[in-house]
Length: 252
Image (cartoon, rainbow, N blue to C red; front, side, top):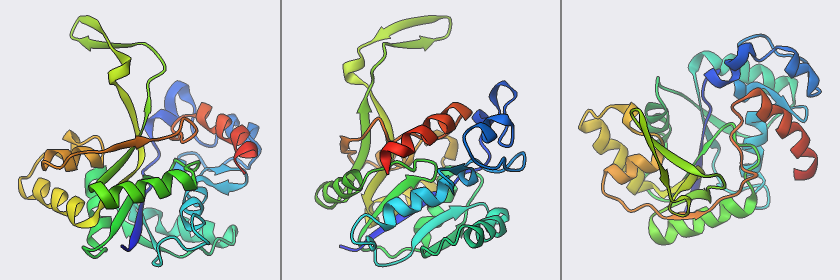
């Protein structure tokens, strides 16, 4: 089966603004790279001297002898960020081939736009652009399981105690029955394309879908979980940037 990747790169992200901290504040300088302009989308912030999005793309491009997919990886960005991406590619001499696709106002719309440029035969791994530490092993396992079962969604057990909040009440939840969901979320292309079409045809609210697996689940397809990794973090806060810079030394 052909293998494809859709890397979804979002916007600035509200959690980068918490406690008054923005990309470009002193935290950016403290982790060893030039402070970006205030408001630079988080996927363009540098870790280890390279923008996070480029680190993520490189994980997929290098997974199997430098050519995992045989076609350019699809990168979904806001159209207004295309010039920024092209400038960063020149500055960092980044020449890994990608196909840029304009994102929508929600993750659902962005992924759907990415799916539209692919055929209906093969497998597709949908991955967050700000998860740069995904391993080759996890990528490969996701494709193997999806080829057999239709879907493969990375997940890790919960370490902390969990309580469910219901109004002004809360109750304990057995954490053994809970998983934290990550990406990649990998599917047979025909399956996930059908799921997105059904949701769009029914005019369902995109905010109802927290991830791609929830779209497939709504369409009636079973979701198969595979073991993810605690190292496969999603960089969403200034603290994540600090951790990522330190972790990169071990990862590479």
